[in-house]
Each structure stands twice: as structure tokens, then as C-alpha cells.
Image (cartoon, rainbow, N blue to C red; front, side, top):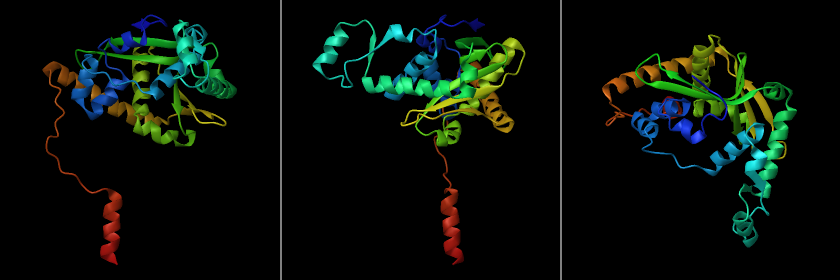
Length: 267
């Protein structure tokens, strides 16, 4: 099923009970936590970084109504009398001056990148997909930040350091996200689409932007991890068993410590 832009709010999408990349990443660490999140029994607290990222997505999406939903606030300090009065007299979400400037400079950086600009041109934003899984009695879903039907998928990411984004890919499971999105959209259109990340820094002065593609090997590893998780989710769904396991484990020393002691013994 394709969910056209505006069909569901972000909250409705995440309350659907279907498994998306966020839940699968959580499942890799804790099946119990992921299932509680899926059922709405636990919701991770929203961070300032998450809210800022959501605002940036809306600013990039021309159909989000960013300028109607948000206005620049009277300064950067929410604790002032002027801010409280402005909030009381405004139906819009007020954004501090510094954040407003940062958001728009980041957006300018994205549009100044010729590869990112090409991906944004004539694209659809926030297109959702939901369907039955191949691996058990449950549903899977994704929501593409940027979609060209049926030729390309792209996802917006913010980062403190663009040069460190490669590490973020493995740390946050972005390779699994890319693999899952390609799998779901392939099932819809029967085409394997290229997937790109549009990453932009949140740090001045330049708010650098890069378009980043994963190698075929990285995408293959992502799919292997996703497929194993989907099989495990299917098995646990049938048995309704979500315990984490690992109540008693043995921990090995890290490689650097082993090497250090090997050098000492050889000395």
C-alpha cells in the first residue's frame, strides 16, 4: 500500500504497529524494547536534536507548509517576557532566531549542492509504504523523505561532522535503513532503486552538504542484517516471545587490550 504525502501524521505512522527501520534497529539491541515501542507501551523521549531535525525536514519539503506552521520568535531566549507574549498571541510554532537562521542556512547549503539539488528537483516528499512481511504474520513499512517514482530514493540526515558521517552509518544502522527501504519499494514497483543520503552539517560556518551512496557490499551487508531480523521477528511474532536473553554472558577483552598485553609479554 502506498500512503501518499499527508495521508498520515508522523505520530499515526509510528503508531501503525508495522515494523520500520527505527524499530528494527531497536530490535537488534533489544527485542523486548522494540516490541514495547511497536505496541505503544513505550515512547522514547523527544530530544532537541530530533525536533530540530523534524523542522529541517519540513523546511526542505515544499508541501509541508513550513512557513504557515512556524514563525521566527522574538529573539533566541524562550524565557523572556517578549517570548511568552508572542507565544500567547500566535497560533504558529515559534522558532528562536538562532535556530531559524541555522535551519535556513542548512537548507541553502543543500540546495547549493548540485547533486542534492538534482535529487530534490520535482521530487515527492514523505511518501509512505506499508505491506505484509514475507517472513511472518506482521507488517513492514517505510517513509521515503525524497522519492522519484520509480527511479531514486533519498533520505535527509543532519550531522555534527560531515567527515564523520561514514561512522554514523554503522553506528545508527543507516545501512539497514537503506536496505529495508529498497526491499519495501522493490515489492511495490518491482524495481531496485538507487538510494542516497543527503547529509548536511548542523555546524557553522559552512553547513557542509554531501550526497552519499553506499557501496553494493555495504548494501548487501545491510540487507543480510535486515533479513535476519525480519526472520527473527516473524518467529517471535508467531510465538509471542520477546525476551532479550543474555541473562548471563562472558565478555572478552577488546582487541586493543589484547594487543597491548601481547606486546608487554613479548618485551
